[in-house]
Image 1 (cartoon, one colour):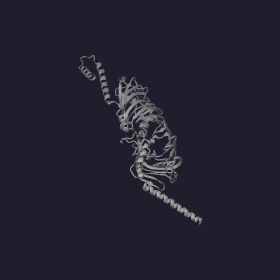
Image 2: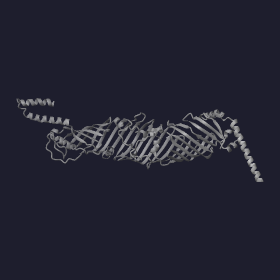
Image 3: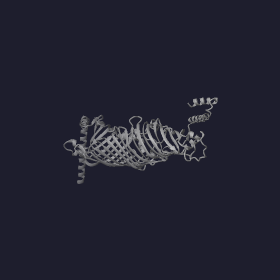
Image 4: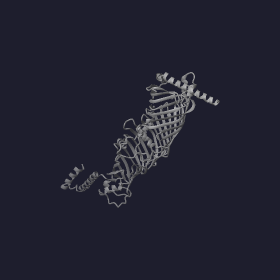
Length: 611
C-alpha cells in the first residue's frame, strides 16, 4: 500500500511539474515576442566591435535545451572577417537555467550550433580565405577550464573539404579568455589528416603546439587547390611519381613579438628541415632550409621547346602569396642531384620584399670547381626581369659540357666572370632577352673534333711550303691557356676576342655561340712565328711565316658534324697575291732589260693588282 501511494505521488508530481513547465513554455512563447530583442542584440554586438544584422526571425527553443534560434545572420568585425550564417542556435542547460538567481546575463552558455552560411577572412598578406557550407556544433560549453567537444566542417579554396574535431578547455578572466587548450585535435583537408595539440595562455598572447600529418600525395593536393591559387599550378615533371609522398611534423611557439616554427618534411623519402622565425614588429619572415640530399632532377619540368612555360617562376612566387612582408630564405643542402651531375655543399641566402628577390650569396661545388653568384629577380611585371652575376672557378669542362649540353669535344678548366640581364617567362624568351658582358679563361684546353696544326700545314702546302714528311696527326688539338671576353645579345654569346696557341702557332679570333639554336661558329686566325709549326710538325715556306691564315669552325652541340677549314675567300686572295709575288720576282730578274716590252706590260699589270 505504501509503495502504491508513493508511486501515485511521484506520477502526480511529475504530471504537475510537466504541466507547469508546459504552461511556462506556452506563456513565454506567446507572451514574450523574442523578435523584439533584435535591436538589443545588434546594439550589444556593436559594443563588442561586431557589426551584426539579423535578417531572419528569432525563435524560442525548449528541447532538448532551452535557447534561441536565429536565422539569416550577417556579421563583420570591421577589419578582416565578415560573413553570413543561415542558422545560429544558442542554448543553455535546464539545470544551469534553474540554478540562476539575480542577473540573467550570468546564465552560462550550454551549446552552440551553426548550420550553413559562409565566412570570409582577409589575412594580413591580402590572401582571402573563404569558408562555405559551414557546420559547427559544440555542447556543454564551459569557461571554467572543463573540457567540452567542438566539431566544425566547411569548404574552402574552390570547394575543398575541411573538418575539425577537438576537445576544448577554456578559462576566462572576466570578459577575456585567459587560457585555451585544444587537445586531441584532428583536422582533415581532403586526404590530409593532421593530429596535434595547441595550448594558449597569458590572455592568448603565448601559444605553443605541435602537429603531425599522414603521408599524402602532394601533387594531387596542389591540383585540388589550383583553381583558387593558380600560383600552385604544377608543370609535368621528369619523374611522374615526384611529389607523391609528403609528411610533415611541426612544433611552434608564438608570442606577441615572435613566432618560431620548426618543421620536418619528408618529401619522397627525403628529410628536409624547414625552420621559420617571424619577427612581428618588423613584419619579417626568416626561413632556414637544410637537407642532406635533394634529388632535384625528379622535379624538373619536362623539356618542351614549343611550350611557353608561363609558370617558370611560379615556385618562387608561392612565398609571396602567403607572406608579403620582408622575407629571408637561407638554404643549405649537402648534395643536390641533377640528371648526370651532382652539386655539393650548396648554400644560398635570399631576401624578398614586395615580389622582388635578391640573392646575396650563392656558393656551391660542382664539376670539381666552384660556383658563386649574386642575383636579383623582379616578379612584379608580367614578364619577370632579372640580373645575374655568376662566377665559375676551375670548372672541369670534361664533366660539365656532357652533363649540361651533351657535348664532349671541348675539355679544360674554365674560369668565368659575367654580368647578365634578362626577362621573360619561358626558357626560350629568357635566352633571347639575355644581355651582358664577361670574360673567361680556359686552362689547358683541348678540342677533339679538329687538329688545327694539321689544317694549317694542309693550307700552307698550297703556298709552296717545303715538302713535308707523312704525319700521324692526332684527331684533336691541345691548346695553351685560352683567354677572351664576350657579349650576350639576342640569344647569342658573341666572343669579342680570344687568344691561345698550339706549338709555334699563335691563334686569335672571334666567334658566336647560339644559346637557342645550340650551335657555334668560331673564326680563328693562325699565325706562324717560326719555320715549323712544332717540333713534330711541318716546315712552312717563309712566305707564310708571320702571316695570318684564317680558319672558320662550325658545329652543333647536339652531336652534329663539326668542320674547321680555311676561309675560302681570304685563301683565294692569298693564293693570288702569292702568285703575283713569284711573278714579280721573275720580273725583277729581267728588270735590267729596260727595253723589254713584256716586262713593262707585266709591271703595269702588277701595280694595278697590288695597289
